[in-house]
Image (cartoon, rainbow, N blue to C red; front, side, top):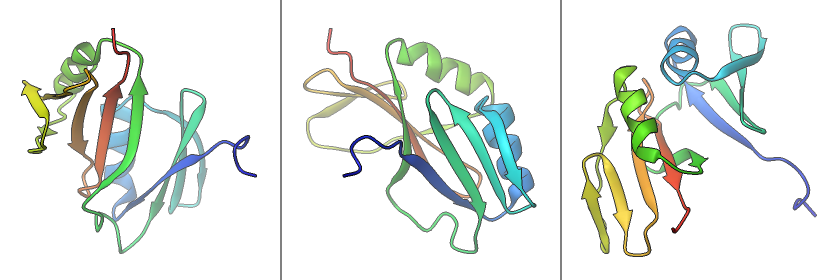
Length: 129
């Protein structure tokens, strides 16, 4: 039923000005649309990121959005660090870490970071070369 429809990452934020600076300037997402001062939509590849103002922002303790990167996650992490992004680390069974990048036993690589509201965001490289 929904298999042929696009999905949108939906992220709650408390301060839209801080969020816009983060998503546009630090992450480099392309602004697509705004609806008043409470909703902003960004283009990310063929997907969209829907950022909206909410008092419940940052409540989730789990990842709220993941970007699938084809290769060179190391370069992406380095570029984001140069833009002021700090990466966070998690201890997980069967996962080692090389710097800020977590590596699974199957070779999948992931790196997590947070937006200004504490929403957990992720980069994942799944090319198992």
